[in-house]
Image (tube, rainbow, N blue to C red; front, side, top):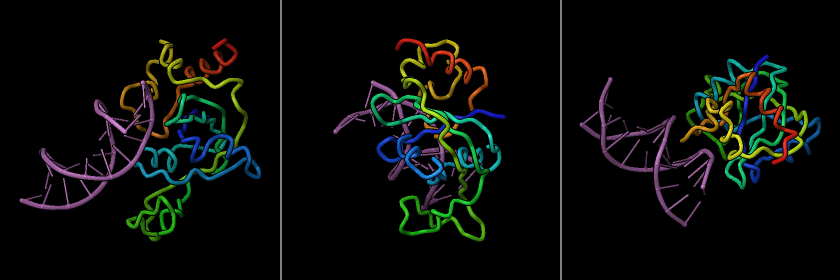
Length: 156
DNA sequence: GCCAACGTTGGC
DNA sequence: GCCAACGTTGGC
């Protein structure tokens, strides 16, 4: 089993949106970056655990845990001109973009903000805390995953 | 295949 | 709202 982190802007699609859905499950559509695409198409497996990260907000933070419940399949929103993430270059005969389904597992007991994550030497290798990081999906080492859960009960 | 221009991300 | 970092595009 592998561990991941996925970013989303809470104003657009936050953890509260995911929780409110039937089965607390949604497809993670709209990713238009090849590195992130490759991870969803090739690497993420049912049962993998995923941190839900709120980006572009105050404060950016890890807020909860999800689980992959469907492995990579074609992101059909790329074919629809009415969709925000329509990509005319993605041909249904040869799809360019993929997505996975994720299901809400639980909220963290507290949000763990980015500036706190940056303060731990244990997490200094995470791409999330490195400068200029723009990747919206990234793998997390098990030891980093475990460390983050271990600080969940700390005073902030 | 190089690289300048441009668009987007996302923290601050 | 600013801007640094980065990915993509397209002319050559």
